[in-house]
Amino acid sequence: MFRYFCIEDYIIGDKVIISGGDLKHLKTILRAKIGDEVSIVTESNEFIAEITEIHNDEIICLLVDKLDRNNEAAINITLCQGIPKQAKMETIIQQNVELGVKSFIPLITERTVVKLNEKDREQKKLDRWRKIAKESSKQSKRNIVPAVEDIMTVKELIEKIKKEEPVVLVPYELENVSTLKDVLSSAKQNYYIIIGPEGGFDIKEIEMFRSIGAHIVTLGKRILRTETAGVVTSSVVLYACDEMM
Image 1 (cartoon, rainbow, N blue to C red):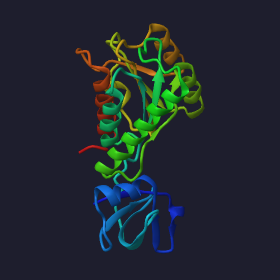
Image 2: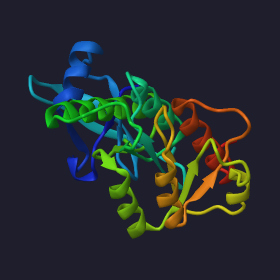
Image 3: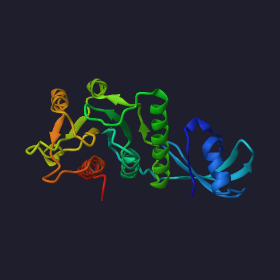
Image 4: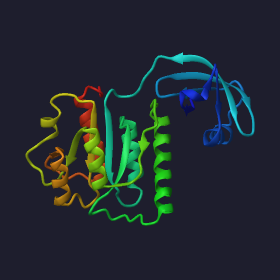
């Protein structure tokens, strides 16, 4: 069933209006017709709605049932990902949205190969990543569309972390003592997972993370690719917090 994400304010009485890209998808791809049902999803509720009117610029739906269902984890995970080459970031976002990660921060590090010097090129990347997050949210029946924040440098990320004080996990291939198991002995509310790009983190960056209380951890004896490390770390955190069966 098609899932339409909206804010509560878009629901007026027992009706909701679908427009924009979702309207186009319903009309041209799914060939929706009057009487079809769609899922209307807000951050706190999910409804079944029936299409009652189809116009050129909007589809009007009537809410017919409210579902008692919340597919979101009780904890918040933000994945801060050193921007990798090619289309790897799309795969990273897709898979971590499916797992339950709630937000993403694309990260420019010392060893990031990808250069986004032009603002329009950067915006195109962000638009594409946000589209992937939305599509993955629909596929995995999320109640929210995880945010893909603007691209940050390591220094900007550190300033953000100082204000929020989450549990910060930094997998690092040269760490061989501290493990995720050591850190995750008790569940917390907010986690930041910081993953380096293909070349890993520079030692100066690791020391910057360590200076704000980040946990520098090993993921085991084998070296994981950048597109694998975030999925593994997120999975372990969710499991340790009883958010995975």
